[in-house]
Image 1 (cartoon, rainbow, N blue to C red):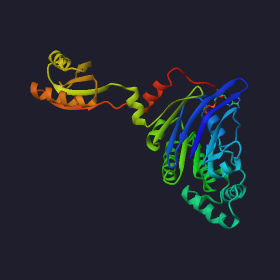
Image 2 (image 1 turned 90 degrees about the vertical axis):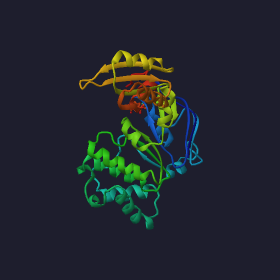
Image 3 (image 1 turned 180 degrees about the vertical axis):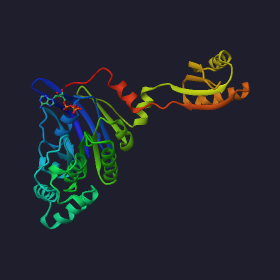
Image 4 (image 1 turned 60 degrees about the vertical axis):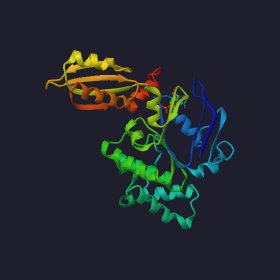
Length: 313
Ligand SMILES: Nc1ncnc2c1ncn2[C@@H]1O[C@H](COP(=O)(O)OP(=O)(O)OP(=O)(O)O)[C@@H](O)[C@H]1O
């Protein structure tokens, strides 16, 4: 659905996107992550044909963005970071105007507008003036606008920025529903959003793509070892020694809990080594109430991948 090949974008004082290549397949939901100033918005604007690139090429649904911009725009629904709505217009009026502008046939316009209003939870506010709506509702109007010409691909640039937690949840649920019918490229700073919605993650840092994989694979590649937590009833020095004798394991931390149990944090070559720890507990007669692998967070993995950069203006 998207094929980006060797794309570079230079602003007068800054190389914003540096020879990037990536693909997004039809039906995929891809999270586009990166620190501030990494090049996400610039990439999305080039992809949607709003910003020319200096070199490279982008294809959307088989059409070249530079040579066939109209074909590309028909197939993309773009929700920019700050959605340029007309605040003095009513919701219905605005969606009619946008549908016309995007070439939706007059005979199909009314039904299509009703459909996207329904999809975005806007049915009740069609007569309201956009400027008087809450930010969450304005964002929904932006989403409805991006859907009105029935695009195959949705490009969403920080769709939940500035919303309160309740609105975030609503917009996120809406995107999840849209994902059933559309290919989605979603940029966000909210990592739970990516964890909740996306199948694959693209990470851009200083204008270069530095990772492209599922969340699970990113964790696996970055964290070669597993951290296992174990709680037992045993004497500390003896337990640490016994665990240390098992090959492929190191006790990183050990502490006696207030209720008398001993907590161990163990670095192991793999999570499957929990079986050996279980067998050891049985053989030593230790009561055991916890034996689990620590989960790595996406935040931890993201920070590690983009560590060399603290953000940019
Ligand atoms: N119109 C412009 N003129 C000059 N430099 C720009 C322009 N737009 C962006 N930049 C610079 O290009 C770099 C990439 O910016 P971009 O907005 O693409 O990053 P981003 O990843 O979307 O950041 P954020 O997460 O903060 O929105 C930044 O250093 C930014 O300052």
